[in-house]
Length: 285
Image (cartoon, rainbow, N blue to C red; front, side):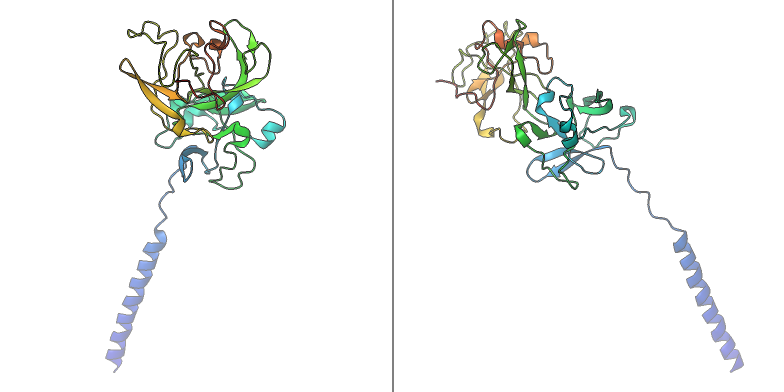
């Protein structure tokens, strides 16, 4: 009996030591290193598609009045729409689908502000949690930042090639007017002599295209409130020109791709090459 008991004790001791070593091995294991969160992310939104957020998933916005690339937000505006800064762009970490070359830094109210494709970026104070997009289309001047806007809504003073300021009716005077730009803030125009989905300006050899380049773009994202059904494309001597409400869309060459420039509104006289916006009439047949 004594030998049997001793054997049982040795077996039990061996099992206890095995369990002990096993637990010790498990205790030495550490959790995998968490994946670093990128400074700017692309998040899926059920309504808006892919949108830009900060590293915590908080939505980032554009301001229509910033078409020039400088922030037009100040005072109470900055309380409601705090600026976003990603910090040192040399070390910025981005989600796939974002290009570092599209980001830059400006100074707003003495603080560093990050821009995307020339648009200064902001938060909205009423976005309580990650994923909120309560700032979308506020005042028809605030829009969620995205990568693929075919056009954006800008708001500012129209200044013609003659250096004069114009109102929305093309009479001289001051006052903000809303107008469409491409995704990088370059103004889009219509030609008063065009017809519905008919370009009457561009020559077959494109010899005058440098002055009024046609806007060729695949229709992708649009700001809330801009009806996708009002867009189409027409064939212009082998190139596809985008139209809105039947109006073929153009750039003005002497704007020199400058963000927010509206020199074309006075050429050759005001109203011949109007800006395009939500209030534009349907092009005539």
